[in-house]
Length: 623
Image 1 (tube, rainbow, N blue to C red):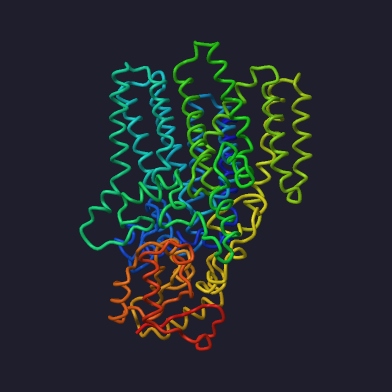
Image 2: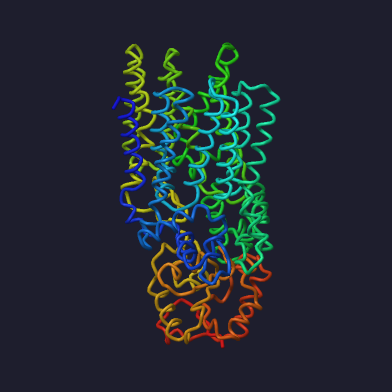
């Protein structure tokens, strides 16, 4: 086996270790999605729609594509945390391999190997590939689309083959849409521009092919939406929507609300603002802004404390590479079309995604930025190779990256502060070796660029699991745990631990055991006000039917008051876990959610805590 093949094998092995080592100790990952995978195994409709609960009352707030492989994995290996996370690690390694193959066609073997290494070592990518959020599969589909586009613009490709590769790219983006909806479409302008720039076909054919790809994109994106909204039989309410339709979920909660900040991300999302005077409201608003929203929107968002250590390590260098390419392209008009298209593809991917992420006014989590990692990796890989032909080129990239690394590292000097001096030494060595051959200077420069993010990635892979698996981050914990910020009402709903790391607390176990023993065989063992995020522990740790009222955060209009009354009347539901104040009332997002809990308080009686041994929870019995 040749040296490049050995090098690629080593990089893939490194990625596999970073993404999979010790995943059995990471528990259930994001318990919201993991609970759904258990419920989805209970029936075809629940599987098809992505139902959070076994009763098929409400779905998760995303399409089910990313959850289907996790469900299949549990069918094969049993319902374990590592079985949920294993597909993520596989998808992550596959993305590294596909990126290598894509960049190799465009910029050569050395650039491809470096791009693969950069992607493997990106801190937020390491963390999200060890978790079960949908972004891992989204990135794989998008890198696959980039590969197909790159194949379609190769100089010696036949016209028919080019068209087929273009259509495949559109199909893969559509698969990404059914993984995380409109987040997949952000790269479409870059893909289209790369094809139009790189293709050697007549312009008429280019336009025709692009229109055909647009049709494939729409069909592959919207088939699940159409299936859901045209489904003739009973189906779960679509979580996060305002009217129970998947189309509304696309346009609203997972669409314009993410960009424009409509209500903090939609009816099923976290509230963007907390009412004035509400207990703990000021702290809650700060947490929502920094942890849930990634800080304030603006050009500096990708570099702030929430994002900087996750994705920005090589971002300044990537932008410098793009600027250098733009200047060089004006001087050299003889660059082959497919090579120009590669810069358009990856530069467009980075700029469009980066701008959308920077200015998004709705819910925005730091792990979303893993979608930037393939573009940064490709630009750095090709950029370092190109910089070797420029005097002090590699040294300049190394110094720029090392300088920014110092800023990021010393935001938390007590956490691996020794990294700073090492980065400085490596940068100095890179500069001092400017007279040495490229085979010497380039590795030293790359080491200076990758050392700091590599430390963050290795620490994430071999260190303790993140405090909040729903919002995983690499590096030092930048905020106190959310439960310390929440008012007493939130603890009453869940028995003292609202972050729901996956294990039942003693209080929750007592509630569940009591409800199971006293429910008289009711179809629904327990209803939980506060939504799926509050009910996840109960679903994960029992074979019982437990419903989280109101979707993800408890404010969706499902189940309705009439449904709850019908369940109680027919003996299908007897116990409801709730607080004195519902989440809908706490956040002033009422409607059906407030009416639901008003009905419970008016028609059910509080179970004395001494009967089940509770101390903080409030359990209602309905007859």
